Length: 285
Image (cartoon, rainbow, N blue to C red; front, side, top):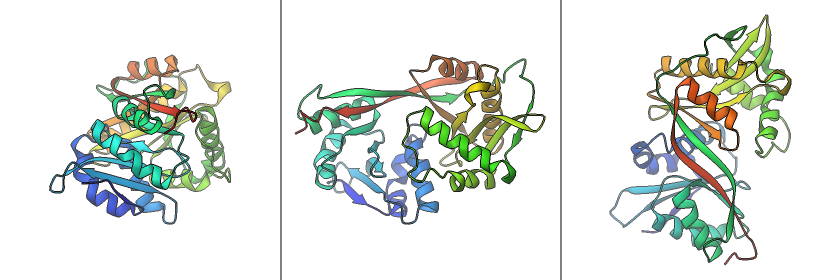
């Protein structure tokens, strides 16, 4: 059976839920992004897809895309990745990159470009899963607290700075207040605070299929290296566990050895690596 595309996040969640639930940690981005679009993204452009190996087979692969951003592939067989190429080429022929675990994105890229090596690895991240939480000892000065509405102007600026620092596309309007406010209202954004002054933040996704993902974690440039990021990450991780998360996850940029070492000290353990592959347009089929 061919890939099925839809722009309806609810339809996608219904069709793909059993597949995503098989390994919710490795499907964390598909789960959290699709849920956010389902509940908050009415009218936002989005493309979802799910795949069956045969007409009577269960869904065993899924992807999503929020154009103009790249497709995000969930764990899938190489066959599914290859069969996705003509489907996406028909609706987005100018596609220039793809994101997902190494095997499936390389299968996709080879089919898209028409040859092995017709791409470059432009970004690598590692998914970590929390084992035994080990907060920093000694903890830095200050304390963890939930963010409030009074913090919103500062935190919206930090959200924008985080996107810039990590190379993510910055919102066209530059306005992060609504997205930040949703996290605050839901009680999912924590601060490390010193005498009433926030010095670092960390947020966590809603719990879906037993997993929650910590993101983003941000400390302003002039305050880094003092342990605030580690302390607030430990605090938000504890909050996720206390809220009932069976798995607490986070992604770290493999080009940043400092953050990778920090998360290991806090008790996070490597689970799987993912890549962004950017196509050589001269070789695209």
